[in-house]
Length: 189
Image (tube, rainbow, N blue to C red):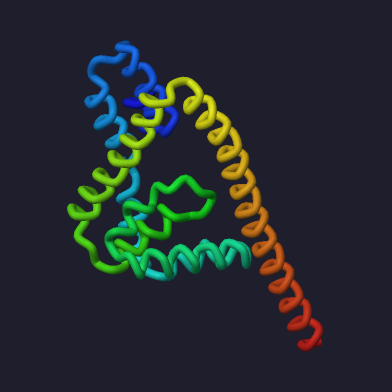
């Protein structure tokens, strides 16, 4: 599972299995999992390079809470600079990775440097979960599975809020355009 997804659960499970001798090539799984997990991170870097702050503004426009969270993470990331990439994998329900990766593109960090730092960061975090699995065993896997269930619901909820905001804004825009056309027609008569 670790090599296929690069997930926290996969890293902890691999650690628990390696502790009892079930997994021989765990380092290879860990490195492959890190590559798999970061495979699309460059897209956020590229978005930051192309559109700069505008891409964050688009995300922040969906809700005041999202704007506040993005502003908070942006402040942290700006203070930390490239070290912010290491915090991108902190498992809290804030858009840390998105904001940090966009900022790295905005600040003109070379792509090769971003990818290397991203890989190292993801690998170090995976090593932490692997170690927890090794030391604690099955209970840490259970806790991470429960977290994943909650995190999935939070992600689904955020998607619903984003889509609702987009549709609501489009509806308001269409209504304003229709009223503008109606007013223009009645003024012309």
